[in-house]
Figure 1 (cartoon, rainbow, N blue to C red):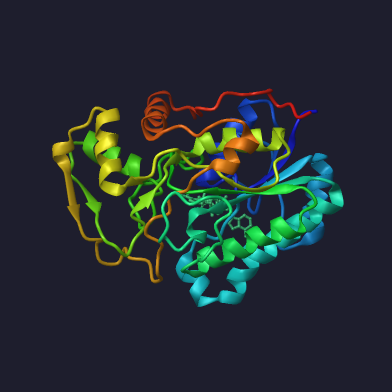
Figure 2 (spheres, rainbow, N blue to C red; figure 1 turned 135 degrees about the vertical axis):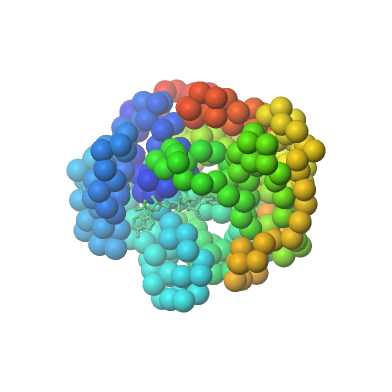
Length: 328
Ligand SMILES: NC(=O)c1ccc[n+]([C@@H]2O[C@H](COP(=O)([O-])OP(=O)(O)OC[C@H]3O[C@@H](n4cnc5c(N)ncnc54)[C@H](OP(=O)(O)O)[C@@H]3O)[C@@H](O)[C@H]2O)c1
């Protein structure tokens, strides 16, 4: 059976990489988008209002979807605090509508979640560790996870963190270090390649340790999860827990860049998020390894694949196709 996937969030950073990998591996994709993405989006799309349950149901039916991968996100943390009710609906309400529509249609659900559901006091935390979010983003993600775990007839939660890669639908967008790990590696590569210094932020109040994985690799592992009809919680991360400074040094080594241009310093004014953040969000993968039948790749491999992506312009997942587009 060929996977027929309805994908939310395909115009975003992770969603675009996931779409590229799935399409390349023979999945029939339909991207549920909220506005006309213009002529450059390379995958089939459909305007879909994720606030409207019947529109989601129609999208699933039109595509004859066998699964829905939900990775759309309102990424404005400050906005969540300004309007909690709207934020709750954009996370938990939307997830519930998608799960209900998928149940009615007989489709499997894959929900992309985050290492920020934890409080950051652990290290290499297992899939069955109880969550303890520190901010509204982590809380709403944890509540959305629970919707999938309790309510979906078939489906899984895939927690990711320390995601590295290129934004495929906005390749010209500036890549910047932030209080999480997103874009850390390529913002460093951009700076050092241009001969500029790069200041690694050091502050116990930001996300300081994670298990980096490339966005393309997430796509390959989500396909495995669909192949295997995974359920429960998966940790889709790299095998290496790393601090920011170590990540910076390892990036210099793999990309042949001058570590002499690295500096450390505080988070610049205005860049700190207005909420507590988890420090160590590294994840372990014992259950995921069993469910997917593969072990995660370490940091050097993740960085080498990112370098290949930068050189070729193509996503370079490390996990190879098990059964191209095929689910038994
Ligand atoms: N990036 C990371 O480092 C990271 C780390 C951990 C977990 N994650 C998880 O990965 C997922 C994707 O994150 P991302 O960083 O790729 O996000 P992103 O780049 O901000 O993309 C967000 C996507 O969601 C869409 N979207 C937002 N609100 C929507 C709505 N109301 N209806 C329909 N679509 C909507 C956006 O569409 P428009 O293009 O129309 O705005 C865009 O396609 C999220 O679940 C996030 O929690 C990401």
